[in-house]
Length: 218
Image (tube, rainbow, N blue to C red; front, side, top):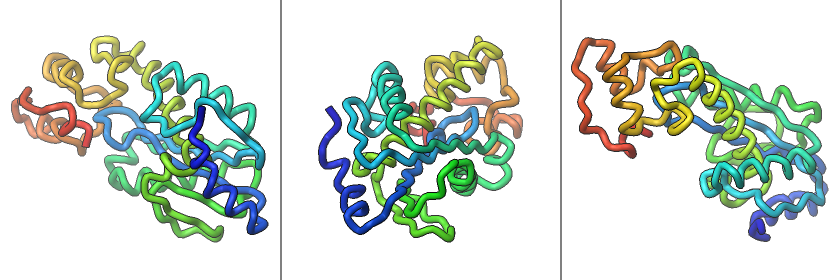
């Protein structure tokens, strides 16, 4: 069951007369491959969930169950994507913000208030940036699940195109399996050229296998 505390921020805003609250979050800042995906979600005022939580705390199966709940109880859902090319051009932080702005722009309902997960944005709607927002706000948590499941579906498609890289297992993060594939097969068009160790590989440097998973996900 979703922690009742996750509804408190939204409840306080509803009590102030705010009608439409959009939670915004992204998935995919850390991976070596694939886009960054953002989602914006406006939930029904009386929405209640069993599975919705910070997407990182849920298994793939739980995220799919939560996704069904969200789609049933959302008034509007928007998705924004920044490509690998955009990430390499403007950096991952700015690309994440652009994806979030795009997600908000695609909402069929204009929000009265926006909650983001530690991402300030200049926008003409009142906005609140909350550190660890996906653990504190039901709207941001819902957005995190939409973003994560959307990106994962894309990476599963990429796994079909590039099966030797094992994207279905690591979704583009720098695991040992992924690093070994990079060393063996080289770089694909969906790899981020400004991320290490790909940046060094493009300079012709030998790929070291001494990176750990945590370092590679930065």
